[in-house]
Length: 180
Image (tube, rainbow, N blue to C red; front, side, top):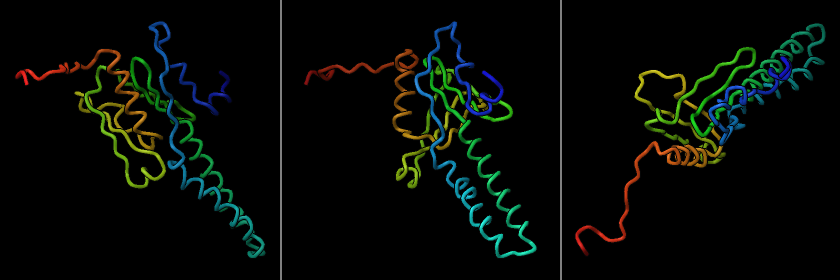
């Protein structure tokens, strides 16, 4: 992948253990709500550009402010776009960064507990946050924020863990043990 291509789209396939048979189950982009305020900041540049007509000799002040708002807004939107949470048949990992790449990974066998938090606004707009707990004190993959369809993603992770045989299943008999 070219340098320009790598700056525009994260290459999560480069981090797969293809020789070991690792396959992507789900690639999760940040929900649009993570970038909402950055979209607002970028949109603020338009009124700033228009206001230059009322500033006469200081027209350059709103132009500079508008360019700054537009640049920061677009940059932060792109940073959120490049943040990916990936569920594979072997592990979960997060890849983020534009000019540098950060990778945090956790094998399915190390996941002890998954907490999903969905605030009221998240329920309205369809996003939530995950907290992964392991036996380790500090891990690189703990908080995953602004996950779209969090219930679906939680079930996907639980399904992968179950299919891998990493959790014991409780046997359910048709009859109770006391004979009733």
